[in-house]
Amino acid sequence: MKKLLVTLILIGAAGGGYWWYTKQKKTAAPAQIYRTEEIKKGSVIQEVTATGTVAPIKEVEVGTQVNGPIERLYVDYNSLVTNGQVIAEIDPAVYKAAYIKAQAQLRSNEASVENIRVKLQLAEKTLARNQQLSKEKMIADSVLDDSVAEVGSLRAQLKIAEATVEQSRANADEAKTNLGYCTIASPVDGVVISRDVDEGQTVVSSMSAQKLFTIALDLKRIQVEASVPEADVGMVRENQMVTFTVDAYRDTFTGRVKQIRLASTTTSNVVTYPVIVEADNPDEKLFPGMTANISIRVAETNDVAVIPAAAFRFTPQGMTSDIKGRKIWVLDETGKPKALPVRVGITDGTHYAVRENEEELLGKQVITGMGMPLTAQNSEAKNPFMPTPPRRRGPAGPRPR
Image 1 (cartoon, rainbow, N blue to C red):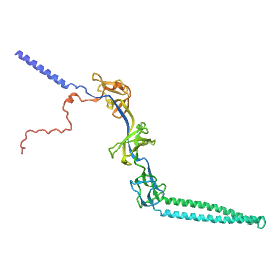
Image 2: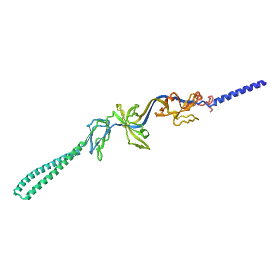
Image 3: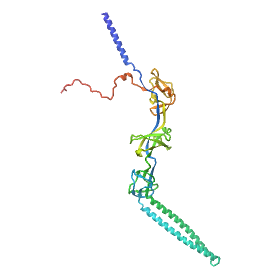
């Protein structure tokens, strides 16, 4: 009996010990698991992103300097035009009448000049005879004086008449020019992208010429006017490679920085500078006014050690380091985190290029974050969005009435 009791006690003690051991094993903290990435050589391309608007490289506004109703339009939107082609006409009746009137006035003033010139020739001959007669004392001196005065007066009248002719000729030229303005011709080869008038509409040109059409030159090449923030514009240089997309297509277009303008714009305390990008327009798919999302390639490095950006944001829990400046945590030979200093160069947002001592870093496992514990990996993952099955209410049966 006593032996049986001792046996039962030993069995109970062994069972309790096993239960305590398994409980402690279950409640023990799982081992730290880290997400790592091997440091390898690669390429890093740093880009400046911005938005801009597609526009023609050059566009011309065609206007009118005369007033009147539009008599005829010869082109419309998207019409191809050539230099000198007539694209519109304004009713020329008023300006034609003004030109005829100016020409008539010019002819009248020219006739007046001829009349005065004939009188002057006669007065000069009379003066010559009177001078000869005066020498022979055959006429009074007053007669000679009158002849001299007559010649001087006619010469003065001739100068006035000639000046009047010049003024009339200028008025006739002005009237002819205004009459010519009634015929609107294209000043360049291009395509009409805007029409601001209709036939029958009266245009009035006051202080400046009223716009009738906007003509864009060859759209086989376009430009993108982008706004680059002041924090990034210092990295932008002329002739840098640019890629951009528009919402209308899935294609990626390429171009180069043509100009960095100094005319800044401030919007909501953000200072931006216009950067002009020139690019080819294959099949003329890009239309003026489209919004372009551009990426300017400002720096590029190849065949260097590359470290993921997440590594610089990670610090192991409960661990510190005396390293000043940028550092990363790598796994040492024992699998424990170890801090290392690092100097980096350009970045593409996801990776950094190493500037110094890259050979010492190649092949190391850099820590980028915490991994899932082994116990959690072995357990069945539960999706919080997965619907749960309905609860069973017991065996089916007739509902009570």
